Structures are given as C-alpha cells and as structure tokens.
Image 1 (cartoon, one colour):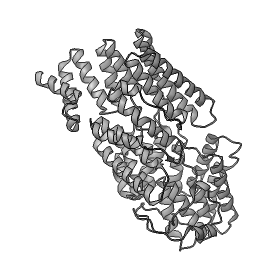
Image 2 (image 1 turned 60 degrees about the horizontal axis):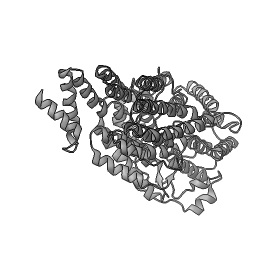
Image 3 (image 1 turned 60 degrees about the vertical axis):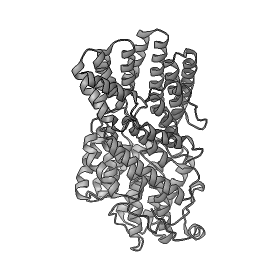
Image 4 (image 1 turned 120 degrees about the vertical axis):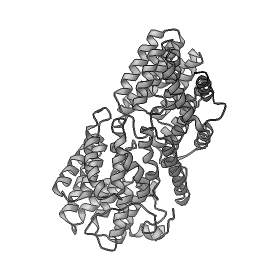
Length: 545
C-alpha cells in the first residue's frame, strides 16, 4: 500500500470548514494513490474535479475504512466547498453501524455538525438532500434519543430513499446496510439479513466489482443458516478491494462459518499484514483494532487445524500490545479472547486458570478472561479459585446490566452464558453432577437463542461442546456424541467437536462411527506436531480398527 501526500497538514486544516476531531488529525491526503478499493458509481452535483475522489471515498466507506474515508471526504469539502455530499460523507464515516463501537458524545456532536454543514449548502439535487436528510435522522436529538431508535429512524429514511430512487443502486446498498445494522441479535429467522441479501444479490450480478455489495453480502450471510450463500462474495471481496485491510479479513467470516480453515487463515494473514503496513505508514500510535480483530480470527482458525506453533506466535504478538487505537470493544475483545482461546481449545486448564485480566478492558472483554480462569480452575479442582473467578464474572455482568450503552444488554447476555457454563463445571468439581448438567444445559439454550457478534469468530468454546465434555466426564458418551454432532451442524469442522465425537463414539461402542471421526482428525491434523496427543490417539485407533 502506498500513501502519497497531497497537502501538508497545515494547508489542509486551513481549508477545511468542517471541524476535525482531536483524535483523528489527518496525517496525509486522500487525493493520492490509495491503491485499489473497488468500483463505485455515485453521481453527485459536486464539481467534476472531485467526483472521482468522492467515489473512491464512498468505496472506502463501504469497506469500513472509516479513518481514510472521513479524511477523504474532508479533503473533498476543502477542494469544493459547495459539495454538500462531502459533508454527508463525513457524517456517514463517524457512525460504524455494524461495529460494537457506538459513537461517543463528542463523535455524535461532530456528526451532527457535518449534517448541519451539508444542510447549509443549497447547490445540490433533491436526491442528495434526501440522502442528507436520512443521515440527519440518525444524528437528530442524539443527546436525548437512544441509539437504536435513531438507527431505526435512519433505516426507515433510507428505505424511503431507495423506494424514491429505484434506479439508484447506492440507495439500495445503503438501505441494505441499515437493515443489517438494526437486525436484532435474538432473531434466529434472520429476517433483516435475508431481506438485505435479496437486495444485494441482484445488485452483485450487475456490479461484481462493488466493494459494498460484496462486503454487505458477507455480513448478511454471516450466520450458520445462510453462510453457504455468502461464499461467492467471500471469494470475491479481497480481489475487489485488495488495498483495504478490512476487505482482506471479511471473507474469513464466511470461511470460518463453513469450516474452510485454510482459506480463513490466508484471508486473515493478508489482513494482519495489510493492517500492520497501515499502522506504520499512518504513524499510528498503538495497535490498530483492525489488526487485532483478524488476529483473533487467525488464532481461531490455526487452532482448528492443530497449528499450535503458528497460533502461539499470534498469541505472543497480541501479548506484547500495550496500547490500542481506537480504544473499545473490538480491540479489547481480541486481546482477551486470543489467550483464552489458546488455553481453552488446547485443554490447558492450568494455563487458563493463570490468565491475567487486562485492567484496561471493558466488562464484556474482561469477563472472557475470568470465564477462562473459572473454567480452568474448576477443571483442575481448584474450587476456591473458581468461586472467586465466578464472583468477578457476576460483578462484570452487573456493570453491563447497569450500563446505558445500547450494546450492553447483548453482552450482559453473553456474560451470563459464560457464568452458567463456568458454574456448571464448578458444580461438577464439587460432585453436584445433576446441578452441573442443569446449568450447562441452560447455558446451551441461552447461547442457541442469540447470534454471535461480528466482533468474534465464535465462542471461545461453544456451550454445547462444554456440555458434551461434561457428559463425557459423567460417563454418558452416547449423549455426549449427540451434543458434539449438533455442535458440528452450526460450527462445521471444529477440531474439538470432531475429536470429541470420535472419543464419544469409541466410548459408546460405535467403532465404525469412531473410525470416521478419527480419520477426519488425521486429515485435519496434517499440520499438527507429530506428538500431538489427539493425532497419536487417532492414529492408534485407526491402526487397531
């Protein structure tokens, strides 16, 4: 990726009429060569000289490259003060609708100011005014009206824009994104996602090089029911926008849903490398959350193929991070989940019990560490340690319950799942197996009722797999096998579930079924170390059966 300077910072700031946030000072121009970001056709009444730059800025916006998109729109506003859509673009760049990082008060103030700036410019079209009015619906009364209500207002407004301008594909694309932004995480019918996907699939046939269409199709189908429908978009998006770090990562959302581990690894390795380059070239202080996010996905995929050495390198890299940019759940979740995955997936219970919580993490991220600690402590028989860790989880859930953050309710539910699962294993450690199974089954039911957040490739260990493990511990292999098999339906090719299925089938006296699963273990473990105990057990069984 190459970034050329167009104007010095001083000249840029002297020209821009819109206020610039203190934490987002531009360090370079966006009229230079930013590489390939895809193709967008978005006619405006702005001067012909800035139209190509405007469409590139929209392309970056569609790929959630908000840092670059915002500054690109500001540069366009400086070059053409009568381009109202440049101010629209700034307002759009300040709201990441699918990320758990909701805008803070200062950012909302900046977005409101950008909308107000756009509304003062009258040399535009009715269509452009409708776009501006739609995003104004999100920022209006931001200090009085809750986030979800304003997001729903924007969705309704964009629906009207899409209906009013039926031939404007951008209106339909942004409406589809609004549908995804307002999809309830508890709706397992995926109504909004299906509606968005239906709209986007038609446009994808017309505009196969559009970054937003491929990107939003991946988000539309990022669930266990629809994932296969997103494979074409997933295999296209990185090629469409090869210069965008997020575009390199997003395909792994579908690859992981389908258990295509090597494709996921390639996707996230490319994304991590591109994000690291961007950190260097933009002189970023700290680790960019868009590098840490694919690192979490990368560790997840490495562990599903038994590549512990590669996973450990990522764990060590994450462990060296001391500062993140921007601060928030995306980065902190990854930094908490990465070491937790590495210990829990490998059944390193002592290592899990010894994990250290990051003091800078918010409650949703910090709870991951205490859950891993509690689970590890329970598995090694440290009842007192597990009890203390469970108390920490409960404290963090109480903080989320009391939080005004619009995302807090969802994360409080995720923490409750963790609490029930860890409490179930603690009950088992105390010899209370009926209570242990009751708690684990309630955790499974709760996890089944909600969808995972895009911030994570999946639970550190699915509750249903933990239930299956507990059934194995309580000498119920036939029931454990059923649970492992059910887990594989929603999370195909997960190593722990496949190996667990093999063990359960063997213990349940189903050798033919066990042979099939052990053969799959050997296949998956082609890159495992030779002394991997799972690989050796599989080889031993196959040699004798």
